[in-house]
Length: 132
Image 1 (cartoon, rainbow, N blue to C red):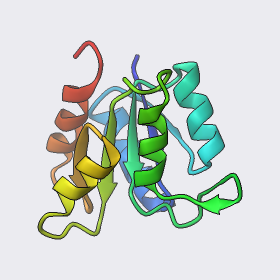
Image 2 (cartoon, rainbow, N blue to C red; image 1 turned 120 degrees about the vertical axis):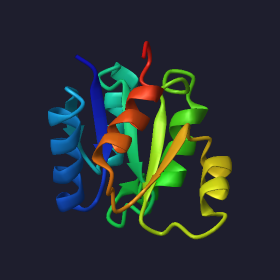
Image 3 (tube, rainbow, N blue to C red; image 1 turned 90 degrees about the horizontal axis):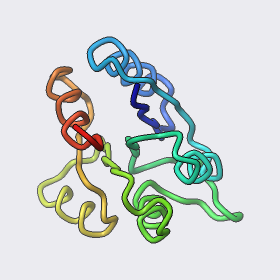
Image 4 (cartoon, helix red, strand yellow; image 1 turned 90 degrees about the vertical axis):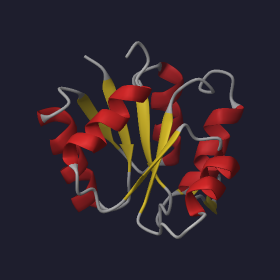
């Protein structure tokens, strides 16, 4: 069974995503907003794909605040985790944001919140899963 790591600072969103992914996608789910944990899970190969919240209001790394774009850049810059697919998730989707966020971060995909079409959400994640 493949595992989605949900990096999200809003527990309600994390719960909703977990439910959709386990029920509709048949996927296993992990959740954390702790940057060190995210890096550890990514490096150990415990996740097949990451759903990355762009804002991450409470996340810190080496004493500094870190958002989802910066964390994605960090993971993409590390050869151990560079090939791990990362999908950005954001509620602040303005025209042009998607392209900017993808370009800045090196992420593989982009989903805007709120997630209305649950099947499309699962499909988008399935498409990027390794071996899909």
